[in-house]
Length: 495
View (cartoon, helix red, strand yellow):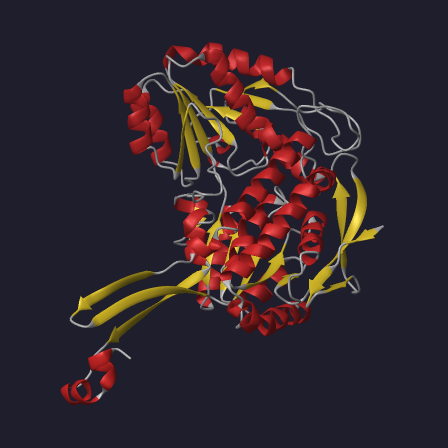
């Protein structure tokens, strides 16, 4: 039985009196255990990060970048091993895991540019003989609280940029998927990072609360459900921390009558059922406009019913793997009964597909959903696509105005007018035009709106650098008295 250890002050620890199980979703069997940290372990990790902070913050940005270049090479060399770890503990298909690892590597590549990203601004003679400059300093000890659905990618959204900016870091990965985070810590350690600069603690709410309230944690990054994101934001800011907290979503995919039907259906299929629907950028509500609704639902059901669903850890090629747990599978399945009881039509029922002892459920399509129904409003976080029919573009846009989330949304159309109206007026922070999953790459911020994000500065891109730094402005007046100018030879000869 593997035990995922804490990493504190450069040392791995597996001892403890409380452990949680780590399941393989493909088999339903326990494959590892994880120690559950309390306030004592959190305090040790934060103390180690705090002790390492002065030396790391004074390390030249170029040298910090060189360490990240080494880390990037380690990740590339071990990408396949890391992807298989993601598949084993989360259940993604191996192709999905490989893609998620690659997106994480891209974030490290972005962080390697930190010498340019940290450059300040200077304006000489802002007033007579007065110069003004701004520079960026690290904020201090930072913490990251990451979800189960992207065990390698989301941590890599956070700590490479934080470390590049001169901060030290404490990572708290989801206790459901600790193995990928442990592997990241091992690879980073092989790059020569000083002890205490990067730490890992595992645990549940007690561990999270200890980080949120710790007086020596300066900044918190979080990705997870909206309810927990709101809690993390409120608790963290209450205790004087800067917080970026990305929450859940109910992403809409509008399909105009002029859309390319086959291409659109493939994009929606990938958006709704990729990663078994367990991602905050999943397309969960299709909104066909007008006469395209019937043929779209027909082709979506045909394509989804043809998807192979099964274990992902045995080398077999499948289109969709399991969800994270037995309890979550049953929760997702229950939404189909809820939809039927509220008057919707279950056009494709994925329950019972896949077989075996894993946490498997097939893709489902629920048609003729009304905006007030639970399947239209609540984040299911599984392979269930709701279809809300609209009469025209304005009705489709109005659906977004009435949804509390605002992560992403896409439109499929050949019309420049429809695309422009959608881009300017749909109530979401990440917009796709003929793109199923409008998730930005590392160089752009992950800009969720409304209850999909709590905070000011988003994860990724330059906003991430700004989150992990604070500005200092210096104004300098240069002058010499007339007597000094007359008497000092340097003013006459320049020697």
